[in-house]
Image (cartoon, rainbow, N blue to C red; front, side):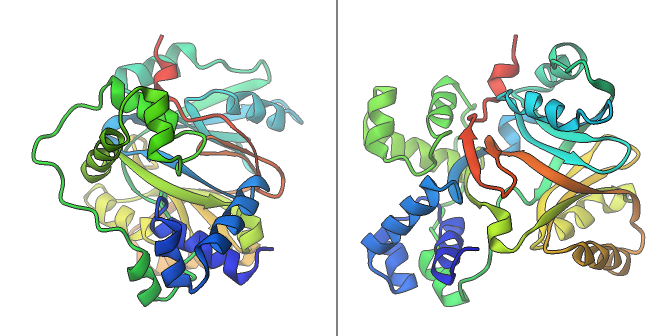
Length: 331
């Protein structure tokens, strides 16, 4: 388990993943060098990491579920996890043994992946997919260890969206990919790799962030923070309530992914759990707060194999990085 200072540092970086150590030190009342060393230790141990996530406007995605021959689910999951456009993979209980989140730059490219090019291991016996529309929450989440005053000290002030909306172009893709291994890479390093100036990199990241094309996220080996398991829900929500229910569930502290999907079960929800009893509590909470919502399926995630480009061990620690690359899906 991580100690209180580690958890507070991770929480601070979840609020502002690229904050200067001096800014974080003011809120946490520790020396900047102490925080930098702690983060280096956490990062090198695979206990925590910072990456960059794409906003809804830059990609299209789907949740794919696969049934496998007995005893082969882990092998199938590991093979899918090697694909850079398969960003998250888990092994679950239930009729479908493996789920994966797939990203592509356009709906046409996503359709091509789902219909033609997704390499399915021979052990897969059945597959179904759910193309998602709006993502309501969970991509960016927090431990909420800091108090309100500390949070406001750390929070970055994001300006209004740019007046002129520019398409997510080749230079933006190159910058996103350059951040895949480390979302805290200095502007100078990024500029040297991409052949531009640090000031240009900073301006472009600021524009992409304000427009919602990207968001930085800090994640953690969740079992080390008390989140010992996960669950996947498929929900049936009245069409007129999908947005309101999705936003409500997306704001829950347990939520790691919540998206509307084009399926009779029209809302997918992935949550972290502190215990099996926690799952029962969530079921009751959904029924109590949203009585019009039906739970079509609930499955325990037995093993989280990959989370947004990070391959994990059985303790949730990052072993290796396969940077998220939706454009790799394009033939």
